[in-house]
Image 1 (cartoon, rainbow, N blue to C red):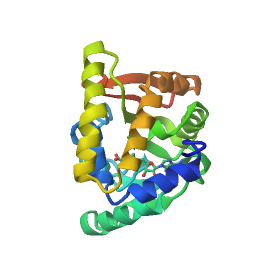
Image 2: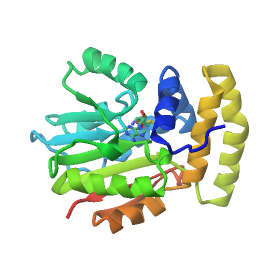
Image 3: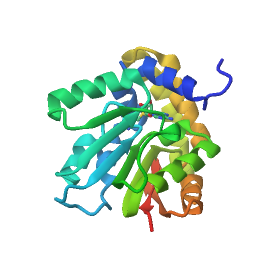
Image 4: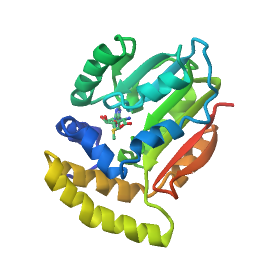
Length: 237
Ligand SMILES: C[S@@+](CC[C@H](N)C(=O)[O-])C[C@H]1O[C@@H](n2cnc3c(N)ncnc32)[C@H](O)[C@@H]1O
């Protein structure tokens, strides 16, 4: 088995291999809620018709672009990811559905060339779990660095609910249902089992929200559907 599940090359390889089945994995592992959560997690953003700058970190195949466009219709959207496999699908989506208007860049978010104080909005959906604590610290610093003063951010991740009963149901779901669905629907059960391992290590975004506060951001903890997803949102002072 792998030595370090947080090694960037390991994570990149995982997503490259998973790219063909990712949309289905994501739908299943979020109980089918991921579409709704992608709307909810940016609900606190100020809606504006201004030509703002937005960046979607860990963009995957561009799953968040539509809801960001609805909220910020005239935004210039930059989308960052380091998996060529995921970005192949993102490029196709960009051409077919977004008139090639999204600026897709292939970079490691923890070692990026993004400009300082540039973005009005930073979004990131379902990407926190593959980072360890040190990496989340770096992510918080980078979020602060690239945001304009007053700029807003929101991160969301599938999480382990704190409620005992829900946790039991969740355990049943991930322990029995997901492997079964996985075998029936997905190309590679090994990869999607890894996603669950990350989720269990991650727990929820409470610790990450502290890290974002310690980085000097105005950050709050968010909970969706009784903690089945959690997140961090706020602004740069
Ligand atoms: C679970 S997917 C999320 C995709 C999408 N945001 C969504 O809403 O479904 C996580 C993505 O983060 C990317 N990723 C993980 N670590 C990264 C890093 N250090 N730099 C850039 N991308 C990274 C992976 O390649 C993958 O596409």
